[in-house]
Length: 271
Image (cartoon, rainbow, N blue to C red; front, side, top):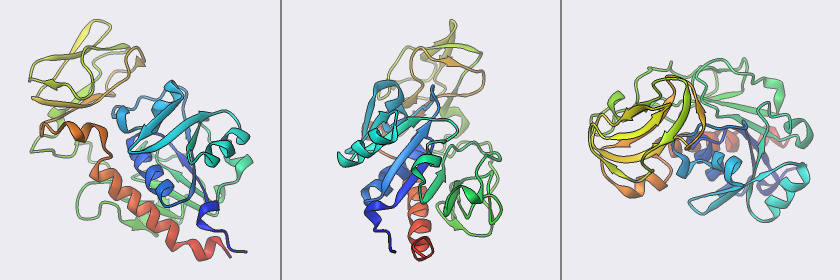
């Protein structure tokens, strides 16, 4: 029996910007999307991350609303309202109850995850850490460049370079990092214009300063516990305020790859 697109259930692990771009595109393509997240997400691009619904109860990104739910009944109610349900469920155990046809691991851990071929009829891994044909059915290339968004059916994505993508020639200098373990305290907000050397946040009193001038495109949530070295924020030197509230080109490219993999596999999923 053929399952119509509107009843094709897709579970996405992760609610950060990349996962949000995927969820947004599949939702717009009339699929039944649900998201699982950890209890304390550390998304930086919070204005375009459905993970914020974990804290706020709901989050709207480019006209699509995600709502925090606690049960499968609440998930179905969200779908009836044309919303995306998001569970606090680090192990994605809700999948054993709802039995999605597709699982997308979009945590972007950049290392081997817990995904298995047997988790769903179609399992997709985003970025390095997965091998198509071994632990997932397909891998989506996440490195910027010629192959960004490519669907890989045999093998792995390119290794993580460890270097942030260039924006107007700036790479590592545009990314803010947490200097020590502690409590993150924001001094500025996403969308604010800052100058090089200006303090943007503190961790237990230690300042985090912008290395370049530009607009704050991403910043950790105020008051959360953080670990040394994680990404604390993102300065965009282009100065376009609208970029702070819109899904990135990279996320859209990856989402396109996921959509391609799902549509390519429809005949097998319906067999």
